Image (tube, rainbow, N blue to C red):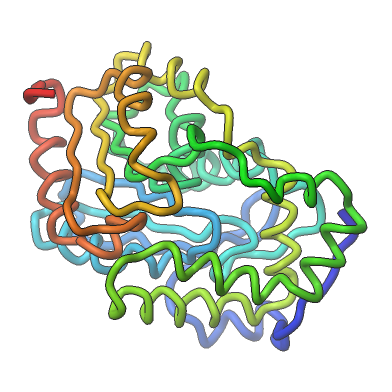
Length: 296
C-alpha cells in the first residue's frame, strides 16, 4: 500500500517527540519499539501482547494488579501503534512476531508467561510456537475464528484502502472503538489513549496495512497447532464481546484444549482493560499451577 497521512494526524513521531514521552525505547532491526518492563525484579515475567489499535497503556490496570501480586510485566506497542515507529511496508504476521521475538531476546528475558488479547492473541500463538522458554499462554478474546467482515473486499485494493483510510479512517476507527468495551468509563479511557496515539503520522496507514496483510480470520489451524503443543493454555472471554463474539468460544476450546477456560460476565471484548483485577487474579492463579485442569 502506498504510504498516506490520515485526517487528524498532525504530529510527527521522532526522537525529539520521544524525549517527552513515558516509557523506554529500543532500536530493533525494523525500527524503534516503545516498551515498559516493570514490577518486582525477582517476580515471574509476564509478556503482554495487545490488539489491533491499542498502545501499551492498554495494559496499565492489569500490569498494576500483577505487580501487586508479585509479577514483573513487559508491555510494548506494536509497530504503528502507541509510540512505536511507523514503518513503510507490509504490517504482517512476520513483522509483529519478529518484533516481539527480537524485543524479548534483546532484553534477555528469562522463561516467561505470555498474555495476548484480540489480534495480540494471534501474535502470541505464532510467537510461542517452537520456543522452549514459554511457561504458559493466556488468550483473552482472541481474534482468528469469527467470520470475516463484509467490508473485507475494501482491503484487496491498495488505492481504495488508501483512499478510505485517508478520508474515512478516523471515523471508522471511532466506530470500532465503540464496540470494544461495555462500560462508559472504560470506553472513555480507551478512546482517549487511542486518539492520542493516532495523531502521529503513519498510524492510519499502519492500521489499514495490518488489515490488508495480517489474517485475523480463518486461523483455525493456528489454534489447532497451539492446542497440540505442550504449553499450558488458559482462555478468557467476555460474555458481551461484540468484536470476537463469544459464539466462537466452543470452537476455540475444541481447538486449543486449554487447561482452563473462564467467561467474565458483564464484560465486553477488552477483558484486561475492563476487568483488570479479575484477569490478574486468573493469570496469577493459573501461572502458579499452569498444568492444573479445572472443570471445563
